[in-house]
Amino acid sequence: MQTRTARATPFYYGWVILGLSAIASCSSRPLMSVAVLTVFVVPMSEQFGWTRAQVAGAVSLGGVLAVVAAPLVGPVLDRYGSGMVVGISSGIAGLCAVALGAVNQIWLFYLVYVPGRATFASPLELGTSVAVSNWFIRRRPFALALNHVSQGSGLAIMPLVSQAIIGAWNWETAWYALGIWTIAVGVVPAMLLMARRPEDLGLEPDGGAGNTPAGRRTGSGRRPQNVADEINFTQRQAIRTRAFWLMMLFAFAGFIVQAGVSLHQVPHFVDQGVPPSVAVWTASTFAISQVPASIFWSALSQRFAARLMMPASGLVVAAGAITTAFASGIAVGVLGAFFLGFGVGGLHMIARLTWADYFGRLHLGVIRSWGLAAQVGGQALGPLAAGLAVDRVGSYEGAFLAFGVNLAVVSLLMLTATRPGRKAAGGGMGIESDAGGSTGSP
Image 1 (cartoon, helix red, strand yellow):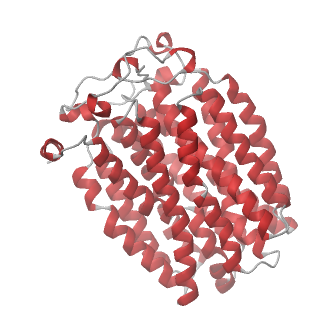
Image 2 (cartoon, helix red, strand yellow):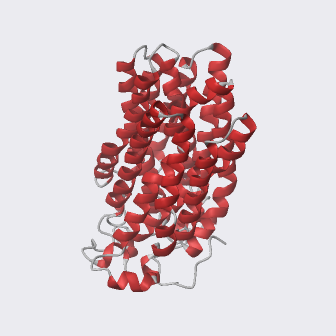
Image 3 (spheres, rainbow, N blue to C red):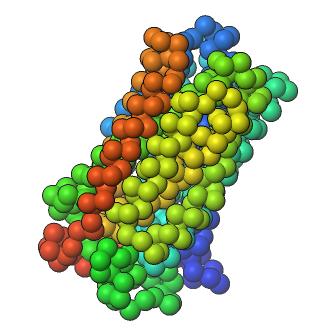
């Protein structure tokens, strides 16, 4: 079916893949994000007497489950593609959201939220980003930026919609509505139409037109432009490079901040006396700012090496965390949320781009799963650490400040993360058609 559809499509089928990924990124992924959960923290914890650390613990446990799942999902993506992974994961996330509307005990909250959070952090992240990266090389920054714009739009809209439904009805109805919507739009299209790589359908990345000649822009850390420019690493080869471990460290430190601050930013200002209907604008600002950030960082990635882009985005995130820590009112809080979201937009965009550019498409799923394990490990630690801090000392300030300073230091280390050469990959070249399936690393 995918081959017939691709041949009948009057334009490059990669844009269909991008559209399907964008739908999942806009609806399925934001559903179990901390940007949405932060709106539910206060009403649910007040109704049931849960502590902030207890709620944050579910996010952390979901991250731990995602760390376990990521290495299992990666080889599936490399062999079979993203369609089944994205479709099934969207269904799981939607069902978990519907079930959240019926919980009344903390153990039930964990039972339902943890697997939903794991799908957000692992298969939905890997499935959408790997799908786009597999279909584009030269246009990869632009395609990934569009996909992230869709995700940022979902992250911006869902907290506002959630708060509106909570205000008009209750938090239970909000969970029901979000879950049903996700199931309706996220399952069937992905399972029917998403193909693994263009070579499987007799196509070329980027549509095969307008590619820059091989080798033209690959020196001095420049991006690959076509199949001939690609260097395809196996998992074993990738883990022997310095860049691989630096990127994992950067992902861990960066997403401690992303999850640790964004989950607690609304409660941080509610604790200072800001009404929840006003404090929620920090969550939406955090999400909205990721939309222009995707375009901004995408444009810069065409001109500057990844080893410069990664620390730049990390320092912006660090500035957002520190600003939020010292914010005593909503105006400065929104400014901190803007910095945080603008930098996180860079973290997402540049990480997805750099893993594919540095290590190629052939084993991208399994290699990217390692980086994702570090990322969700940070996302697991950050919310729990901040929740424990506020339960112990009554303030988020110290935790947010520590997160920001730590990321600033790690960001400077990324200046040494240069792109590995062909020698490190044993001369690995581009991909030929292998529609029968590709195994992961040896």
